[in-house]
Image 1 (cartoon, rainbow, N blue to C red):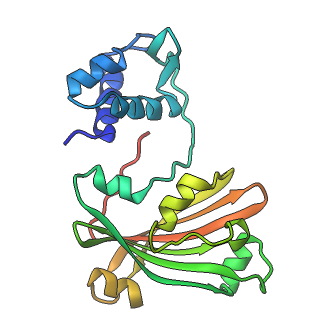
Image 2 (cartoon, rainbow, N blue to C red):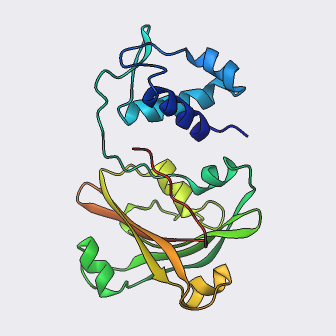
Length: 227
């Protein structure tokens, strides 16, 4: 299966190999879609990602060309896990394990700059790929930014709802290895102490925190980043 990420990787390979040197206009979306055997929208998504990363320059009526001097832009691109899993040809599902309004630990309120008596929405979700645990999501969400009534996060994951609905202006991202314990060890069926990859992310809208997320990946998960 050829997804947009595969096309992005191949276009980037051609740029780096100087098959398409700096300044050259590359084939159009329709030609690339025919070459790769995919929909034009799939090609568009791949080229848009490369343009946002500074490798391509896209101009209406003049086509898409390789950037003369590629600019490296640090961006925080939040994926929808459903899209990520389905792009791999696997069936996606999720289960909401916990959902309640409660006072967060001091470490959370301190990190988000909130008053210690300000409740937040606690969400715990497991994302599945072909019925197997793919990621465990532990999330604190600022209820002040949610509509009334609150979205049904058992029908649409908080991950997908947030990416679709709330724009963020700033954020940070960190990766770390942690020993599995408690619910996380249970979800993945691993022994306590097993090393798992954890991604931590906070996002903000102006001076308002949106969410603090800890996403723990299944054993063997690989993170691939475009540079």
